[in-house]
Length: 301
Ligand SMILES: [Zn+2]
Image: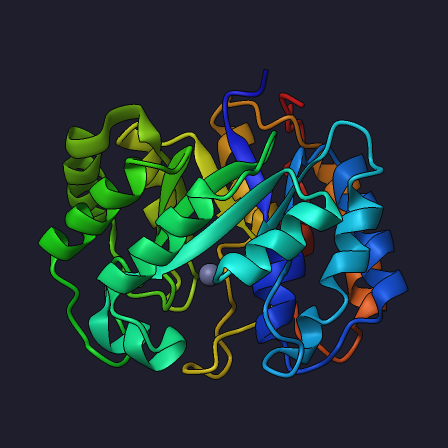
């Protein structure tokens, strides 16, 4: 088993924020290439109304294709019971529910307070879902473009509520406000409260701190990370900034430290070419693919 577990969220988080649409067949080819590179978990889409996010309109078809890939855990996002039911029907192995810790962000996005959204997820957890894991992701956990500061106490409270009925809980820096000191403090506090239920870290690279934050979370005991190939999707609030923490650089960091990810970097670069071909208009980022691997680099994969 790899020491570090990486979930590729580019097909969901990246494409959802991209300015251009990626054709369904290109998505399927990219997901296959990601799995070939050794990614064992991929968030492939979101069961939101297609009118709201046209880039996710083909999520059902994408899930159905992805579950045919041997050994791949297929994750989808759902905002409510209807989305959850669609995810289960399509065959997703795991469903992530975002719950914003920012009141302002939650009201604007889902017209519910964070507490009401927690109850929505509780309702989903009560709905029969044999073999499907549920993750509660506390989004805007490190700050919010609408509200500014998000109090740690709010994050701890929401994470604790989600831990009552979710299989795992993640903390997400949705808008790229986090810094490493804050990451250590908040992951430490939430872990104290919910222990092993705290699983994942989801960082954005908006201000270039994605890797630093991932390392800080690692030092707090986190072993599950979300990232996106090429930092796909950018940031609507920061022109020129990449989206999620970049998979290629995250894998390189951990492998260079001697920590296995199970991912082969050369194959990952090949998957990046398939991504670039599938959505050629969209900028993609990343230092490691541009610089290449250092001479004598001994990957653990
Ligand atoms: Zn995100």
